[in-house]
Figure 1 (cartoon, rainbow, N blue to C red):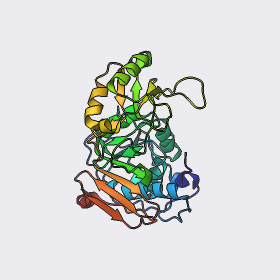
Figure 2: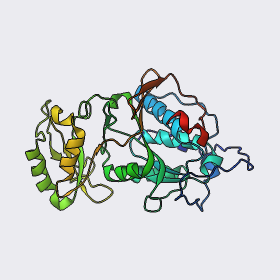
Figure 3: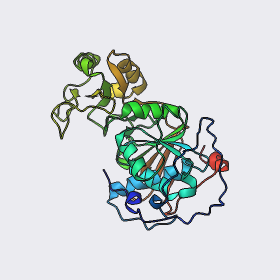
Figure 4: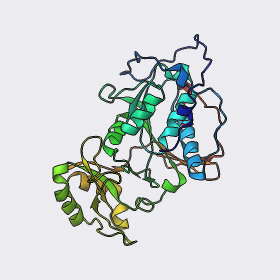
Length: 322
């Protein structure tokens, strides 16, 4: 996991005015947290950003820009996704200050994001408490031109999709390597599919008959049950299920919605790591310090830089990024 500057600066405190106005939540299901945010774990409103390697710097740019645009004062229930870009999302939210975060609740998509929320001193909630989420920001393994994406490299696709569907607004953040025209171009290891453990062999057979590749074009193994790298045996998700990685030919990947429906219909499949028609926007940090933004209306824009100090918006500013 990439280092998180916000969590490391635990001694920084924010001189927030106790008289700052409260911003009402637009979420009717919001219940203010009973545990206050820990002041000692808040970033100051301005901080000198450390120099990062190109890819990490790109991830930070994308995360910071997305938070500035979509996490406003009125957002009280916020979903925190999974992946290597998400720590920077938490950094930027922390930098919004104690006053902004003291009445917020943060919903994780998995163990990683749960730990980020706890270590940052933010209030932890769960989706069974908050069935409607104001905004969720999540990473992605690959995103196509229509904002369809592959997710599940970290085996969190089930909870990630639940939080994506529960969110009024779902935003993806990634670096430039994840920006593709067709899914499967850069994420070649296949679609992550969460399956019931007792059904994995049957689902592997089904996927093979469906056309999943047994061998990748580079000669590496294709369709497979994902195995652990630091343990013997298969990877087990936070939900106690197995993960199958299923690559498909390019022509099939050009129709991700159809492929999603076909895989999801297989008995034994719990969830499929294809996210189609769900995102409002995707933010890609580039090596040159710019951020490309793809939106679900087909528009593409680019911003030249991201300020060190967060841009904290209110409800009236929502129209600028709608």
